[in-house]
Length: 111
Image 1: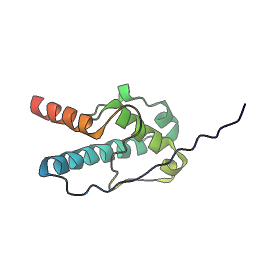
Image 2: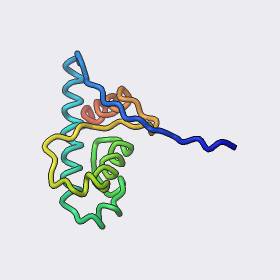
Image 3: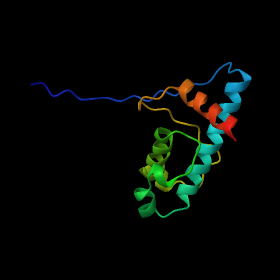
Image 4: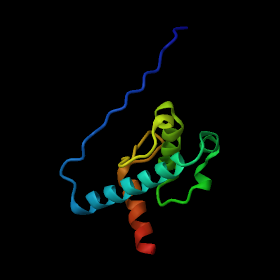
């Protein structure tokens, strides 16, 4: 049996020509993402490692909050003191950007 090495590649795409609604939603999501990350960074690393999405109140989907938790407990996140701006990272946890935006819009209408 051949040992196949799995390679993961992260591609950062620039958002070009977003309409006003999507640009505003991206801005809201980025602000919420930055807020959560800075809140987590204020905790000691041992507490951050125990953090789960159930303990964090947010409008973001749990997959996105999990990504923030992973980011702040990573070696890079441990060295960071505070974020000025932390964009949302969409990973392969069965979420698509339009589904996240649709959910955020629904939450905004309920308030």
